[in-house]
Image (cartoon, rainbow, N blue to C red; front, side, top):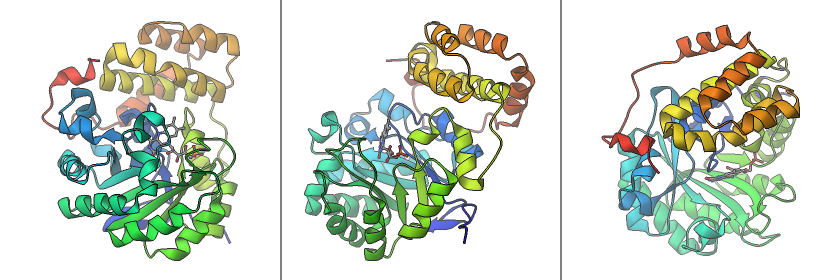
Length: 352
Ligand SMILES: Cc1cc2nc3c(=O)[nH]c(=O)nc-3n(C[C@H](O)[C@H](O)[C@H](O)COP(=O)(O)O)c2cc1C
């Protein structure tokens, strides 16, 4: 029997309206990505990982990650760090910023992060990991979630030992990406491990890894007992994949729809990051979107080398003039002027 991904479920007392969660992705999960994810069917969206040390030192760019828009809820903000007291303080700021859930990163395999004792290395230190969860759960009223990998080395089953301890320490939900840190993104996600984790804990589990279609989501939910699936790479430049995963079988987007979504994404990202940072940041998205829209490779190559985002917009509209009214409609539907912001210097968005 089909599982209804439009069914709601709970993380603590927070209701999540669908069984699809948009993955946190460093260098991808800007506000535009999260708002778009919510529009296309994600029940929960997540910020990319935010450094607790950056928050502690009031680093402007780090604080910029704590901006929450009214149409993102429910939203989790993800923290990484290794000092329980510093992480608890950062969690208080996450709560003040208006997030619904504090998420802790125990999965990042990247050396720059693991070297500091944060991310996936904490899976090998369950006592410290538990103290971090306990400190954060004690510091905020929000539910605490933890995202982890299977362990550090290939074949590791560490997550099955650590997961229940983190729940005992106060985690209200666990997300498992069942690859090892060593694997990075190679091989496949072993969701047999997700099923084992589900059987060991009495909180919901989110299954992350290689979920790119409605059919795959159905199989993973049915065979693991997970409460929801998380989608990462499949949603890069492809919000239509989210709609397909939730509802199954929608028509392919037209080139006009792809261009309208991309231009909206560009405009929102420029507002968030400033033109200078956004113009570099956005380049990877051009390739992702234009591939989805089946534009010729030569066109993508032409767009990627353009400097100013205004020139990119012009090139896109020249290639798909019918996108203009769609874009106007999308912009008219967006809420304006009601964003929840911290009292932050505005230079964050142009700087760095
Ligand atoms: C570019 C990129 C950045 C990522 N950044 C984060 C991150 O900041 N925090 C995190 O918990 N996971 C991060 N991940 C892992 C994803 O959230 C997800 O667990 C993983 O990509 C597997 O899901 P997928 O197969 O749907 O992509 C990242 C993945 C990618 C590809």
